[in-house]
Length: 124
Image (tube, rainbow, N blue to C red; front, side, top):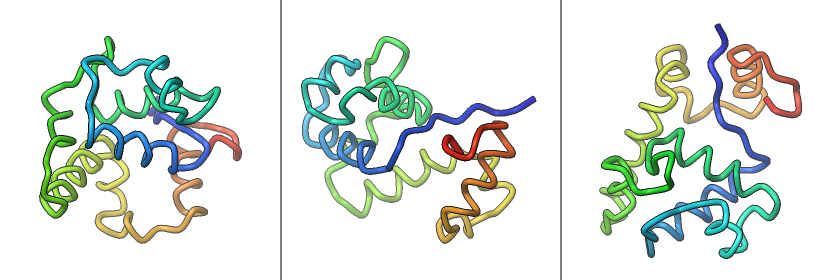
């Protein structure tokens, strides 16, 4: 059975959202929240799906225990803990490729996700 990973066109939208949540994490993060922030216009649900996949918000959009990583102030500590979230969420990818995942090019990642999720080239 294929694993389903969230997708969004470009990592910039997720990076913007993470940056915002690190400075101000609302009580509830919904598509409406993302829309008001002007992040990922017309693709707000994809941002929400990615945050849920990482485990930082639950189905209601509330911060989870894992979401507390976004409140870590010291950059070095934040990066270390956020990396752990990524490793856990993409466990299958890291089990297959190890630390080389961080150096994989787009083609390698697209190939992996297309095979895992049985998606089209555009989605992969």
